[in-house]
Amino acid sequence: MMVYLLQALSFLWGVTAIVGVVINYVKRDDARGTLYENHFDWQIRTFWWGLLWGVVGVLLIIALGLGFLVMFVAWVWAIYRVVKGWLKLSEGKPVYPA
Image (cartoon, rainbow, N blue to C red; front, side, top):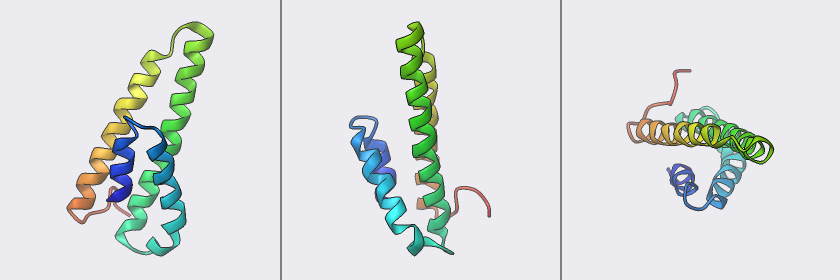
């Protein structure tokens, strides 16, 4: 649950997302074969895809003065993933069926 909190806080302080993904990678082997493995994969994908689309958005802003829409959609998508994952974890369920 801590990594979901760190991801949520990253909307205010981006560095917490980095701390969260580091925790995911460090603890990933401990989670193998458990419900948490599914959540770790979800959180790691959320971080990397969010970072990718954030960078694309910034580059489009710099190059074309556009990109705010890309960044907004990436932000909404990341919020959705954090909320969905956190709710599923609190229910004791995987984010997506195995």
